[in-house]
Image (cartoon, rainbow, N blue to C red):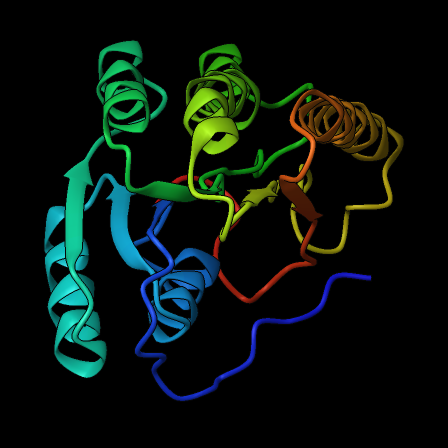
Length: 209
């Protein structure tokens, strides 16, 4: 069972930097707030610059932590490569939260193939590439901090229809992939903590927004 991050007061220790994707709203924004309070500086990644600016300013004011932002759409390879470069070059990064993701809002038959391709790019390809880019730095980084968080949020059918067979099939296959990636990550890098969290519906649209 995953232990929830508590709402403890701001830590004065410096635990390095956490890079969080999908950080502007929802679960990503909550992780940003909690990790800053635990002593992490932050790199927040999302598509919406205004939301990122507002969140970064609020967290920096409330915690005193350094907060950088990267405006990026991880369904676009050029943007993914920019984030990969930050992961490879920033030696302060000690935690990665792969939170960005979205689910199809229609049945497989009614979904656009272009939308499904974008979903795979974000939920699978970007997750894999970013994790691969982060791994070398996490292995050789400070032994005081060995934490990598891999999150995947991928509801596939609209509310009330999650039980349909095609929804279960796609969710199970992508969830199995994310689990195997996390297990392989942990086996490759002894001492790194890998957490995989699959949330239920959280009251926000499951498609892109």
